Image (cartoon, rainbow, N blue to C red; front, side):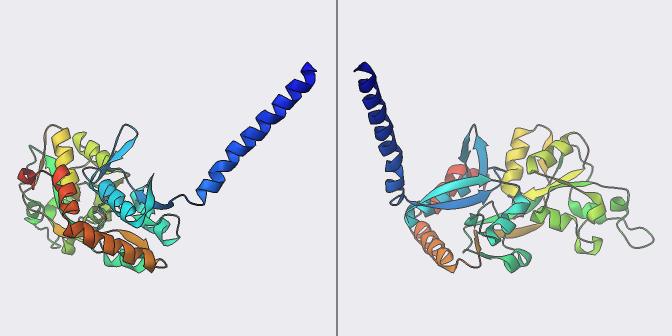
Length: 272
Ligand code: GLN
């Protein structure tokens, strides 16, 4: 009798368990669709990690967009250089990483309306003998090339970023040529290379530059800026419906002041 009771209980347990495991499948049908965002969370104040959680301007704007779209935001922290390819193939729905709109990137993905601007700047050690990057080009050798650059100035950049593209450009385009550029996986690693004198300067976006200078003693941002850029969200060319929805959400979030509020939270007015 005891045995039968045990058997009945065991079956009851198995069935109730099966019922339990079945339930989420049913509710999954009503679950919100995911909005998978690829980013590189080493770019403060746009995206960075605090413990296990993602923080930053892009994260909060993406959350606000997902909410408007009735979707659940899922964040994938990947190498910056893999974001465009992953969005193109549909591995990620969107790429949001303080990403500058460039003609080359536009060949592979669509961009939303811009939601912020960035400036490329040069970080050097406080005691750097050059006051501006124009000084690198101030003396020319007999071939007409900047003599200082020829001496082997090494520039650190985050691989595949616009800082990398500008720094690796030819001398007549104010670049340093690819031979003089050392690429790192993250901006933070490039800054560490500057701290340990492996490179003489780091070319990177203004806001992360300010964060890095604040966090590391003995660094400064050179006065002259390279260029101003626009940040936007990358979406697959196949998914124009999502792009339209994102643009509409961005319009609404701009109109009701949400985007400004998020940016102001991370970049206080006195630092702009
Ligand atoms: N704005 C730069 C770019 O798009 C850098 C972005 C980043 O490092 N996350 O290339």
